[in-house]
Image (cartoon, rainbow, N blue to C red; front, side, top):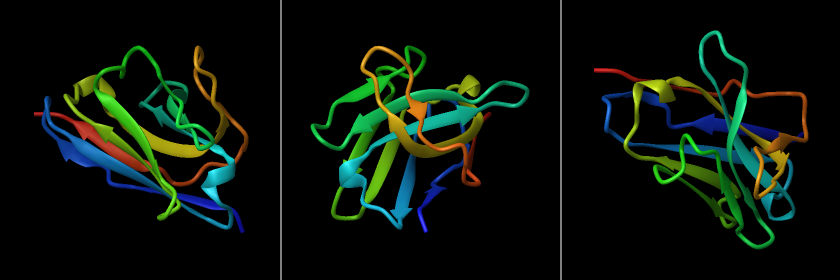
Length: 124
């Protein structure tokens, strides 16, 4: 059974950092691009970053560029999202998924099923 499980969210003050994890089971990330998405209250889910396992190419949407870093650990079959300089507008539920990863546009999920995600709240 293919499954991705997100973790690492929490409550953090503005300017703080969090590291999100996306652990895969049932498939090997080496053959996929993996993306991170987020959905804020009252807003649609948006793709914010992705990484190609084949060559490590990455994409970031403008709102997170320079603050977030995506990385893959093939040995752990996991993808991580290091989030620094967090802002209140980063508050959302964060999800990961296998994606089409474009270098000039947000990632497109290959699945219509989503995990539970992990809540990130940035507030003082």
